Image (cartoon, rainbow, N blue to C red; front, side, top):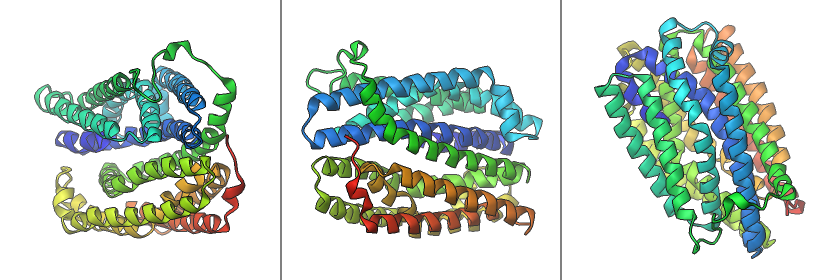
Length: 419
């Protein structure tokens, strides 16, 4: 939602500003997914220990998750800050000077926000493992409120454009992190953070977390590297096509909000069931939560489909760009409803049981064979525009969803152990 608000509210500056935010967000999503991979690894380990009623190891796993994820985020942020301009040149190549200037402005505060975001992701993963999700929802509401009001002041009043949007995002993430930390730094907390700086630092626990996090991180990182390559391909089509793609990406994010929330719940629930070796409940909750993803996605996609022209108009695109974006956005809504749950919800059952290497292999092969290669073919040889990127992505979803379903039905994940 923070990225969506930045895109919409900066649109009054023009298509160049929308394009800049979109380009930075394509890198940001890559790194956010890396942080999420570590939090997922921690959530799986913590959930399985809680399912086994092993509180001591659950506390150790949660603390070592915070140590490793925060350290990696800080190193990444410092490195990319030092080579920011080179990163922009290498990743996005020949973009117009106004887009490049806005991209540089927005990138700096977003990079500074990564350590706070990684800490926040770890804290929310621990809370979800405990089943305390009301606080993560409250933190998200607070962060989005701060971001929206900050955007209103810095973009509309102080005319800072994308830089103002970036500063608002940085502020909201720091405050969200502090909010979560204050709630978890209490004696009554099951996995209390009191004494966090005293350890214990456990390399064996970090190793368990990394057994899940590294394959998941490789998968998500290379997956989004592929997305960035596709974004670079889109950048060659011009500013208008970049802006259209940004709008459709936001539609994709809207329709996936309930599914992504349920995906996180699925990891916690299946992880606790796996800790008890309760395979019957794993299958029951997987079916139940898949149905919930379909039902909740339907509730969002239907009104969005009906009012697509009105929503697209909010982004400040030119009339020709709006006409081109509407059918692409509607096609995305249909694919998100029908195909997306098998490609992105079902694998969370496999992740929670430790079957992360299979997911990594399938994700990477499908990504590079279909989403990246097919997109290049459709654009370079069949002269499609940004719609070719989305057609290639739907094929990617379909292939990986079919392979994940076959793996789940095989039952091979039952023999895997991570604790």
